[in-house]
Image 1 (cartoon, rainbow, N blue to C red):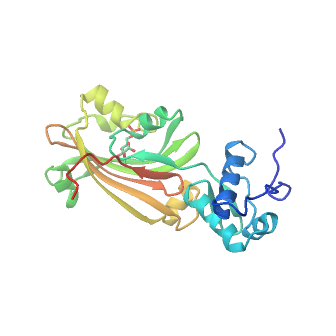
Image 2: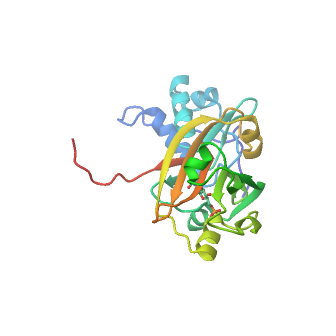
Length: 258
Ligand code: 16G
């Protein structure tokens, strides 16, 4: 089937201008339906604010709101010189689950892979010794990986793992192996809990190049220390996800309502 481009596409859907549903919402939903039906594919250009306003006979502010909502829901991204184009809807990461990237992607039916940027043995110092609860100078494996799903770069991850508890781990080929699978299968380690900090910050130049996103695009950063049931730190990590590809979710357990 031939795919229409933004210019030739017919945006002639008639809006219900007298009903209760806001016009921007009707436009936004019409565009989402076209994306979900495959009429607009990932990478396709969306009509500009001006084009939308003209086709639907609405104000530019209404058109802007529709495009803004598509972007914040992860269906589109704007880039200088390229306009607004369709992206994959955001993946929702349940931060209550201590799943590794490989397992998480497989459960979503996606094919995980990694590009290994660094795999080095460091000698622990400073704050790392406190986080990993090891002595100064203790050997620590440092991993930097670009995490990819179905060929799309999703995140940049840096992990530090104390080799004192996992001797020989540094000889694993982490361009193809899952860290959590190796720790579980070879060392019998299971994660019990983690302390996590979530933060938003702009992408650095290196990140924007590696993740193919605009410079300064918003990143969702999750830093964590993950522990065993015996309270031994397994990993100190920082995962930097593309903000337009990920969002975090959590189920808040019952507590006293105050
Ligand atoms: C997740 C972890 C990361 C860990 C990786 C292991 C978060 C925020 N980060 O991405 O710390 O290193 O999984 O993945 O959950 P792997 O088992 O595929 O190597």
